Picture (cartoon, rainbow, N blue to C red):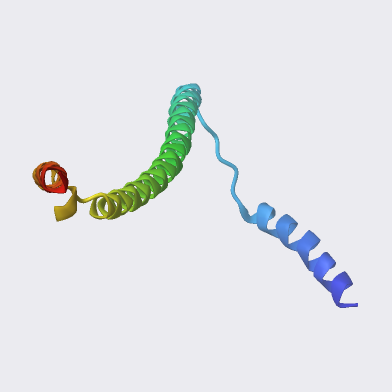
Amino acid sequence: MMKKLLLILLTVVPFSVSAQIPDTVFTKDEVLRIGSYIDSLEQVNSINQEIILQQAYKTNLLQAYSKQDSMLIGYQNQEIDLLRRSLKIQENLTEVNKKRWIDSPLIWFALGVGTIYLSSEVVSNVK
């Protein structure tokens, strides 16, 4: 019942409103000016639509660049972490391979000279 009442009101109200609007008469000059004004508005509208399309393209392009930059930053952070790990491993390796006092060539030379001297003493005392 409510739908029918609403339907009747919606069909009757527009006819009563249009009956109250007075007719407007335009001269040829006014019609030409209105036509040229509409043409200029259509031209401005088409230019604005082209600008909107260009800006949308630029926005999409910048969003793609932003995603690409974010990925590059992530990869660079991973690379930095890997380089830090590599540096720590190399520091540990240098500590492991650090020369000790026993690895000195001077000590080995002295031990060699001492061995030869001691051997020659032993051989000379054996006779």
